[in-house]
Amino acid sequence: GEDVEQSLFLSVREGDSSVINCTYTDSSSTYLYWYKQEPGAGLQLLTYIFSNMDMKQDQRLTVLLNKKDKHLSLRIADTQTGDSAIYFCAARDNFNKFYFGSGTKLNVKP
Amino acid sequence: EAQVTQNPRYLITVTGKKLTVTCSQNMNHEYMSWYRQDPGLGLRQIYYSMNVEVTDKGDVPEGYKVSRKEKRNFPLILESPSPNQTSLYFCASIAGGGDTQYFGPGTRLTVL
Image 1 (spheres, helix red, strand yellow):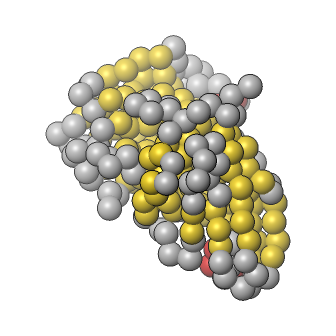
Image 2: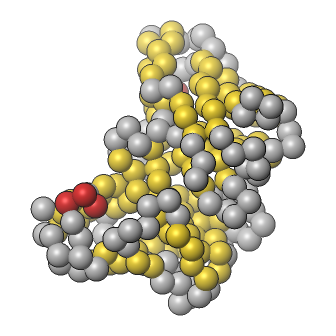
Image 3: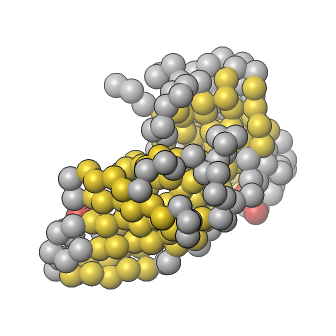
């Protein structure tokens, strides 16, 4: 199966930009996703990118995809304390199986 | 309201006692899936179903069964639960040809 990897922690100051990185191993992944999980809650889809795209912007969120390096990043502009959560990267393969990273815990300091 | 529901939300049981966690969606989605979430491991897919009567193994299917007799329901069955199945379980669904996966609220299972 595919391996999806993320760093475990990121700490930023309120108002700064946050960049969360993810790598994956299956070059045939069709969709790549970013989910947010707040304490005690389920997963909320933040954004996704189709594999034939390089970039997608959605308000404060920018997703960059480097297919050659199999690297995905999520940039959150003007990070707020309400953005503190665990962020999961996920890849969907040709058989519609999903592979998730272990999650990056984002801590936003006031 | 479009949603994925799971029951029960919390369950404590003992080793070997068969249990079923139900999952239902009201969005007429073809694709449904079960995941388990463990600290440091993220979410791992247990089983998924592309449509009624069609199920496939995910990454960690051992010790679990599923069935898809109706489009809206996708129960997860643990025939003989063991302590290593203590986890947080999520059900999810996607519309056919869609890209957005909707998650249920989660079921926290403890097997003693």
